[in-house]
Length: 125
Image (spheres, rainbow, N blue to C red):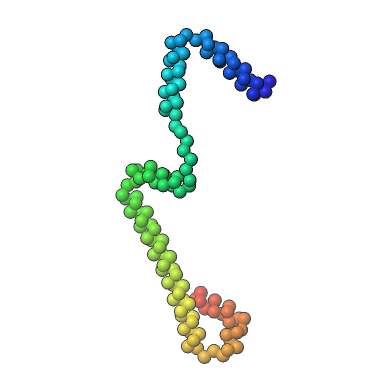
């Protein structure tokens, strides 16, 4: 007996039992079914952005002002560190460029393959 046949037989048996119920019991079962259907949650399909927005909206009440300030401070700290790191890289490159321009290097030194390695090693110091 496969699952489909079993489901069919179970449905037939339940339907036969339903016909034998007294009308008062039938009415109570119908009312209970209607109440259950009214309480049933309906799944709503949303896009990813809508889900993110609803997550923030649902949890906004639980956020404390202290948590918001900590999150903003963290974002400001990361942005400041990134800016400072980029500025340090620019300062290093500026120092190398000014040393190259001020020095009396021959053109052959600039085209030498070892010169690039020397630049990288002097930049790390």
